[in-house]
Amino acid sequence: MTNDSGVAGGVNPHRTSIARIAKLWPWAAPVGAWFVMALSAIGRVPVPLLTLVLVMAVLAAVHHAEVVAHKVGEPFGTFLLALAVTVIELGLIVTIMSAAGEDAATLARDTVFAAVMLIVNGVVGICLLIGGVRHGEQVFQQSGVSASLATLSALTVLTLVLPNFTLSEPGPVYAPSQLGFVATVSFLLYATFVLVQTVRHRDYFLPDQPTAADEDAHAAPPPRRRAILSGMALLLCLVAVVLLAKTLAPAIEAGVSAIGAPRALVGVIIAALVLLPESVAATRAAFANRLQTSLNLGLGSALATIGLTIPAVAGLSLFMGLPIALGLDAKSTVLLFLTLIVATLSLGTGRTTILQGAVHLMILAVYLFTTVVP
Image 1 (cartoon, one colour):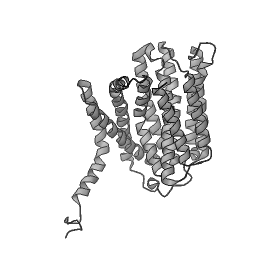
Image 2: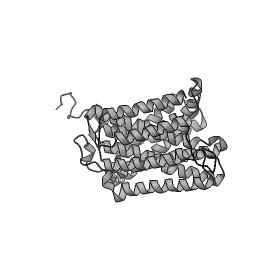
Image 3: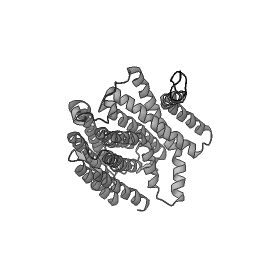
Image 4: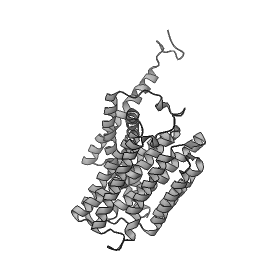
């Protein structure tokens, strides 16, 4: 007996092969990424191959993050992904700072600022635009988003703007005592936010009700063993993404120099590569009409970037005596304030359309253009 396609037994071998590949590739991607990194340690690996492996590692990370998120539930899933990416990014920054010494005085500032601009204007803007195009209007819990923006505003101004106006040390640096105090305040602010998000007021960060497009909300959670394995694979993928981005850095620097762009563009590109897993996950959630998950990922990542990176690099600076300049220049300060004001207004009603997304993306375009053409 054959089916419509003429295959005996009613089973299509091509579909079976595709299904098998779909199950195996998220596990093969991190193995392949680590294999390519091992090759790069002993010889030269073509840039196109590094780029391809990086993209596959990002997609695999998103897959495993969604498995873990579905098992532990929101907002723990998005929090774990944001925390994992930030901790690995922090390790990369601390390593570079330790090796570069005085040459890395502005590394933390540039990386944190680039991450905030890429997340709040780029990731959030794309999610709002895609969600608006596909679903017309999207809704979210305003209470949770407002709490995130309030914390983000305090953290960014205290760490990236205030150093320009203190008197103990000429800007853009803090005096040692000021640096230690602001680092402690930053960590306490982030810790308080995490407590509110995951324990005290968890309902502020949950969607009011699952949408029809949210198939994951109705699916059975994965088995515990699979969730644990996905968590381990997620960590391997994230480390691979950061290390591959670091391996690609020389090629990126050469490309930036070839076009005559400022060196600051290298930091933007590296930050974009490191943030790829969260960006893809947030975009997929917005496409499925889960804007709350997208905002939890985006804003939570921005908060983790500042709340963990600044205290860590401040401690490194104080312990090793390395200089650290945190204050932004005038142009960057204006763009930061514009971003915070627009984000507060565009996310202040609990409903969004394509307009809010377009505004954020235009601010991102201005930021990127003025980075290339100061």
